[in-house]
Length: 141
Image (cartoon, rainbow, N blue to C red; front, side):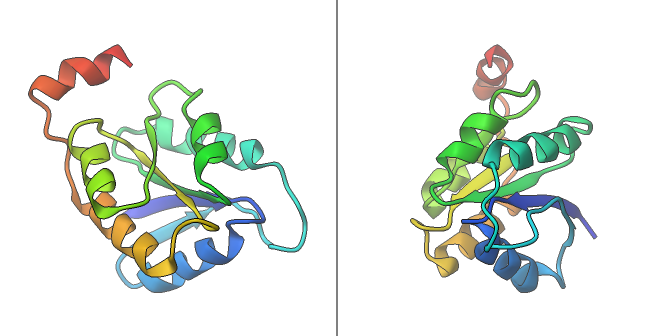
């Protein structure tokens, strides 16, 4: 069973918990926090924690959830070997994997419906990097 690292801030906590519940029979999750929607936390702390895990192994992937998905993405993309993509549709999620070899999906709990988030996660996990002409571009990142 594939292990997926997952983390959120307080704004993304409820969606993070719903994701784990929805996919727990298919995937094993390593939850890196936060543990509540009640106590405000700083999203970069949780993004950095997850990125350390994902960057240690090229087969690792991660899910980050905050209010918009943007803050987590910005914090994550400061790390070497990380390509975090803000995903909000099936098409942009698929392209983030096919062309950009994204290894972290970031979701905005205030902007993305739960059903759409679930579909994006399924696409993200099951889409493989196309390589080819995209490989040299990804190396430049």
